[in-house]
Amino acid sequence: MTDARVDLRLDRPAAGPAAVSQARTGPWPAKLLLFTLAVPFFFPVGPLFLTADRFLLLLLFLPCMKIWLSGGAGRIILPDIALILFCLWTVLSMVVVDGASSVVEASGINTVETLGAYLVGRCFVRSAADFRSVARFLVLMILAMLPFALHETLTGQNYLLSVANKVWPSYADVPKEPRWGLDRVALTFYHPILFGVFCGSGFAICYFVLGYDRPRIIRIAQTALVALVATLSLSSGPLTALVSQASLIAWDSALHRFRKRWTVLLCGVGTLWISLEIAANRSVPELFLTYFAFNPSTAYNRIRIWEFGVLSIQQHPLFGIGLSGDWVRPWWMGDSMDMFWIVSAVRHGLPAGLLMHLAFMSMVILVALKPRLGDRDASYRLGFLVCMTGFYLAGWTVHYWKVIYVLFMLLLGSGAWLLGASDTQKSEETDSAPREAGTRSRRTWSRDTEDYAQRHPKYTRSENSSQRRKT
Image (cartoon, rainbow, N blue to C red):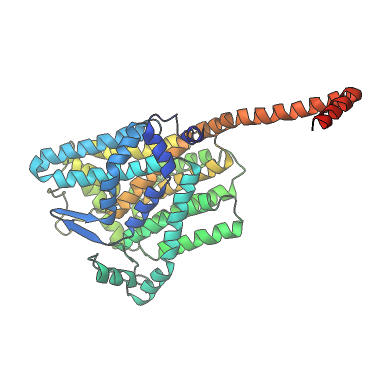
């Protein structure tokens, strides 16, 4: 009976022992993957360059596939199919452009980091309790970084990374340009952008998930601390994610009694977009890239990345430029393409870019349109959606690579449990119905016995006397 009750947490009853094993495991693999993202150690294994998160993903990939195929992660949904097709298309494009002999390592790592990280979230975050547990672990990691981040931004010394390099080969401390008189914080991450995106991902989750049903002052204080840690990266991409998430939180707080507030917001954004396209002398993407940058040169460079990235996609629409190719650009531009949402299309062709967008958008839309959620699950859903909004907007100003790409895929997959949340609640109510019925029948029997005793006192006394004589 206990195992059946646990299985009801899934979108549909799970078949086979894999689902039961997953249900008993809990979300610890997802939390362990989060921890490895902050571990700077790397392990050269022959031609492979394995970081801690890649090593863990290699261990978890086949178990996750087994759980997913056996139904332990719920029903198959559109984002699952889109990401599988994305991985297959990237392998095909690498074979066509770079040759089959040179893509085994790259295609394997890409598949493990994309589909593997996504399936860890899909398979091991299967309930509101799992989601809250992972959110709490993420926020605790971010808050634990605060004193070290303050030390680095004030002194310019990366204490954690220097200690890590004494223990095991780790990342080098990359040179960083100071901003606002402060050093840009990276800690154990390869670059300040990665640090900022990692910490900023916990902003809305902290407010809507950990802050649910908490005193308002505690809710705001812990969210503000997360924002402080993320801000110390002093990078426009993470700050873009923070500003967008804070704006949506403010909108929800101001109009939380108005049920159509999100419809009004979407209509307002659409109207503003059309108005700017008509009235402004620049396109809306150019305006966005201009105002979400630290300086004009950064904004100009991102506009050029957009223009020449689109030109490269037009010249290589089907399979892209591959891993060894070079995208079209002027000689004075660097080779870094700080725009996640077009990188896949540039490298592997337009189908790859569209499939990545399909996976993201379909998950967001499916979760957003999920009906009949309770107050707690609705708040958790809002935290997930606002977090994904931050990722989407920041993805037009930075590229997600290394551990942040894994984090993005993990969090994207961890929101799929919401698609079965109402079914879970109904199942739990159905499961508890026989126990409640039994309790009601016992109470009814007791009341009937008392009524009988009051109506027939002499029979009751004689029965009690006979029972005492037998005793």
